[in-house]
Amino acid sequence: MKSWISGLTLIGGLAILLTTMLNAGSSGEMMEIAEVKPVPEGFGEVWLGAGCFWCVEAVLEKQGGIDSIVSGYMGGEVPNPTYRAVCAGTTGHAEVVRVVYDPEKLPFEELLRWFWKLHDPTTLNRQGNDVGTQYRSAIYYTTEAQKTAVEKSIKELNASDMYPGNAVTEVAKASAFYPAEKYHQDYYQNNKNQGYCRFVILPKLEKLGLDD
Picture (cartoon, rainbow, N blue to C red):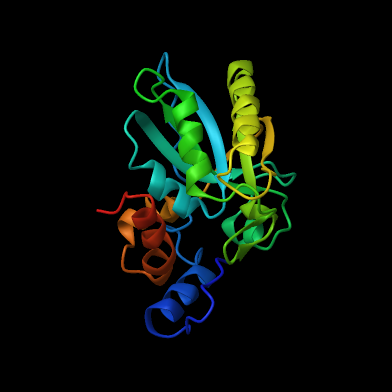
């Protein structure tokens, strides 16, 4: 499950959110899997893991040049994983977002710059209070050009003073992708008053100058 900010008491809206997530899957509608559309000709496709996929999606949805974003799971060994299983850390998957982008409007290098800004890639299997291998920093590329760009970008990041340590981001070729349950898609946009959205995602958007 998503972890909570230190010092916050799990009452009211936070407790309701936690109960909702624990009970997710009891409704057939909530268990519906998100649709993954084909990549338009000339567009790029990459999977990014940077902690909670709700946060990553919320940030990247603010960027121009992105055709679609789908939250889901990649990098594990168990086929057709559920959110509950991934959160338990038993499948090996990372929470990721599939990003389809127009390189004419959003060059891959610019997308990577946002990726480094929206999370701390130097913390192993952790983003804030969200702890576990499912929250690892990861880039799953689809082309050799993307791989080369990622390797170059990591070298530049490590040589900068953006973070005190070096990136521990997993870089690997894209493997089987499993779209997350439909209720995870556009989570922040659909649940802005929920505890995790108000206390974790909104401050991140504000810090990056992307709040509404």
